[in-house]
Length: 375
Ligand SMILES: NC(=O)c1ccc[n+]([C@@H]2O[C@H](COP(=O)([O-])OP(=O)(O)OC[C@H]3O[C@@H](n4cnc5c(N)ncnc54)[C@H](O)[C@@H]3O)[C@@H](O)[C@H]2O)c1
Image (cartoon, rainbow, N blue to C red):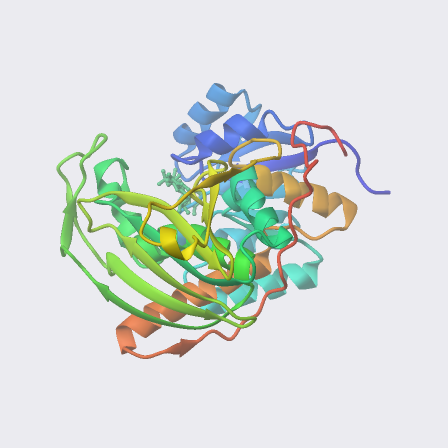
């Protein structure tokens, strides 16, 4: 008989981002956080005390815990696939922070392993499941901007070495602005246009070393392994094109810019690294008003607001009810495939096809309520 009651969840990796996950998942009635694990057991112990999680320990303590049905993998990108693979081997569903892995092969292997085991994988970001992006998508689905034709996204600032106490991984293979922030923007574009067909890109590295500017190791210098400014073009299988900037090299901060232009209007989607925000639309002006400032109209933002953990909850409910998660492993893989293709395009100076395909991601039900008990 299927299990009933909240889904037992264990965390592997309890660093910086675990705070927001723990704040939320400990409030969702369909989730029961039973154990936290980290390479650094003291960190897991401190987070367990802070969020009243009854047990803590190592990754193995999480994998061997009989009450854990699903592992929330919040380790660093370089070990995402390895940790997720161990969790699947232990018979657990997996939610993974983005990206699903740092190379295509391990991403594909993971999906195949989960499939064979009859287990589900979900991949961040789940920001796109929040009322902001979802209300914008509903406006597009209603035809508010006509046929979507193109999009522009911008994420540029001076970089996470300014605030993260251990920022090295964010400048290493598997991260950089493309792999670290790209998932929010590319996932949003895939929600709007569907699968990516091909990409082109240029990139550069503003500095070869960076210096930590926050936390205990302030002043420590480290090597930059990846491009820190990337400009990418994408073409979508079902039509539509996009242009995107991902940069850790810009003294000028401009973040969360996502504009989708259709035959009838341009829509502003809120920052896809957040769960909500203003959704605005401007329509083509009359010919005599062509030089006037754009007239913006607000689109109502609807849906229950919660933060990181929405995707974990959706995955947990899907695991119990036999459904498919919205932030699926297949979507996470297609986004990774696109990011790797952009990386290849900028390294090899050519247009690169994207081979994988993902089904159109359904809209979140407007009455989706994370605070309701359903299991
Ligand atoms: N920090 C943010 O603002 C942020 C936001 C969104 C997503 N993320 C993503 O979340 C993930 C974690 O980021 P973070 O900022 O929390 O990093 P972090 O360095 O603060 O924490 C990572 C934790 O994972 C642990 N860890 C690493 N390898 C492990 C292993 N093999 N087994 C067990 N524990 C292991 C480390 O000891 C550390 O405590 C990354 O994928 C990142 O892209 C971070």
